Length: 406
Image (cartoon, rainbow, N blue to C red):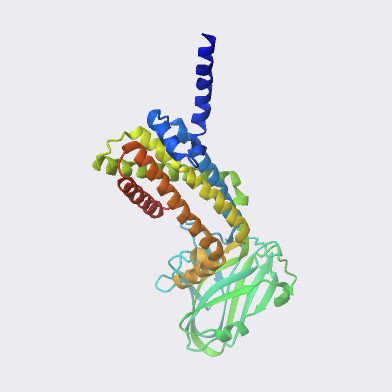
């Protein structure tokens, strides 16, 4: 009697272990695993796959973000609050000599998501110069550890000649302490009647220092002069301190990891139910007469290949991709600026993208094969009728993922 009981005891202990390792064995013995699922389907099988996918996806996302540096600006853009280029969206920030009128222009501005829907207009009649200033801001850190440049857009509407001289001033604390930059030479490449882009480096040697402190920039001023009295109209837009790139993951690693994990969860579940649903419809239409539960579990087990894809991509990324820097032009510039910045970033990531595309094709083929085997085991249909639903389901799931951004 004892001899008869011993094998039964061994089997009872072995089955849970065998069952728990289905997500591994499906990689090298899929036919046998799918037979097991058909005989005894348990949802716990795909829980392990789900956890592995979330972990691998989170790790891959973490690696991507750890190599991504986003350009910070001051003032900071806040899309949720409707705050864009704050200093050129509000005329009350500006002061000038009495001969200059400061208003907002809603009809002529830069068309980019960082630039809002208006520009600042400075106008004066029968005068040879204008001086405008923005004070009591910041303080802005423009030292070696802070912002590296000041950028702005200027459109000289009238007169039909450019200023003969121009200056840019950065105040430090009060108007008696400042840095002076001769903007005249930078105007040589400018044109009247179009938006001219200026990005001025905040390198010490390029500026005249009048007791200024780069750690405490508190205001900006612009001065333009013409050889004789004229009617002046100048537009200003997109005034930002910039050139400081920060890694977003370092700011809130736990928060970003949580967000990536949630996206990974939805990505897995969406693919699981879309693929299973489409295959279920086709196989039953072909006369397979299969049940939902074993099919869902079999498809869930095949998705272990996506976790493997994440691991491979993580390794490839670590070896082929340098840090990526996302400039203001990419984040919120004009259409042409964004296109140029995007092309540059794509070029930097081209090797990784090429390898990742080949990896994706191999994983897609592997996943299709596993789904086809599962379909044949569960339905006893021909290989052709088992393969067709797999291909259709995976293509639709991929398209839906792209459409919803997962």
